[in-house]
Length: 455
Image 1: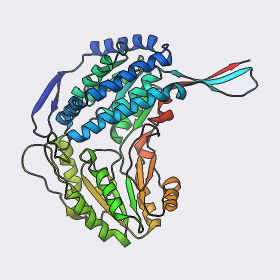
Image 2 (image 1 turned 90 degrees about the horizontal axis):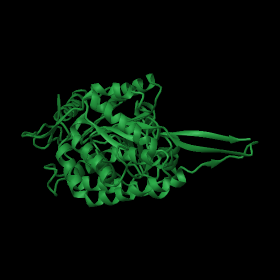
Image 3 (image 1 turned 180 degrees about the vertical axis):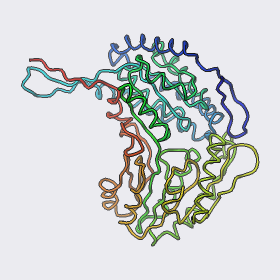
Image 4 (image 1 turned 30 degrees about the vertical axis):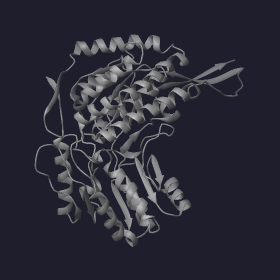
């Protein structure tokens, strides 16, 4: 059975791909295992060299890669270029810092010599989503390969072109054959790859539902897994917030990638003292965006990645309104082709509504009214997710206290929207997964943290 990529702006077929047969998958795993045997023993400085070439190629191919993302999943060209640039910066970070991050750590004990060293694990299966089809893959694979592992990518079916584009990038950058390979499979065939003894570990980014399945399969095989799953990030707006900057940060976060981001501002927890003014400003800001063809330079938000995703978002909005939420903006299915959905604002959102309980993966903001800081923190934490959170207040000490000690999430920001940075660890708690990517924590996820003791 073939896998098809569909342009979400037009509904037209982009490309059909033939799935890899079981024998072809086995051949890829054999090749990856063979490549690992030599790559793992390559010294760190030799390993770093092709990453610098990768940085150059990303910048040279910025336009074509942005165009590919626009066609396969609807990302506006401006945002696609920014994604490519961020990938290049992350590669530069690890090229500059990896040697230090992976250096043995001497520990004083009763031995004549004792230290901790960081050794690779082997071929790692990388199961990635469509929403940031370059960043998500490179965010894992750059530190993993730098540590001496090799990667086997199973990308989302809808971004198969991006999968092969990444394989080409690694090859053209001068990496040894087979240290990065792509396989084309439907999701129901992934379990066999996870269980295969040639795969040493698994990383997965995607929905919490799918993450549970991957975790159980990896657990059954006693393999290390890192999971970056869904999020329903709370953004707490206190009575002393600078509303102009808060609204700008929140609207930006809510609309990046047409709202299809795990760390987008999703549940806007706003104290009553400023809620009416906040609503007015947010509606004004979100109503100003231009929805349209992602290839058009003037487009702010393109279509959602698939029609079924658009239809599910509309269900969540409609059911929330039926349960008592008020619609301040948007909320209507547009006519015409494509998976488009308007910028939407809901208010009076409460527990029991889809906009409160579920992740809204699209350009729909949900305002949750609270009386004060204490109630706001309680509401912010009343979710099964724990990926990101933010707090807005002009009292920076107050904001830092709330972010550091009281909000339950892997990343907590003060007076800004949540985003990843190569220098900082990224990941979640609760139903948002476990493990960390990026920074020194990320490069040490897929290593054997080995004690060496010499008497």
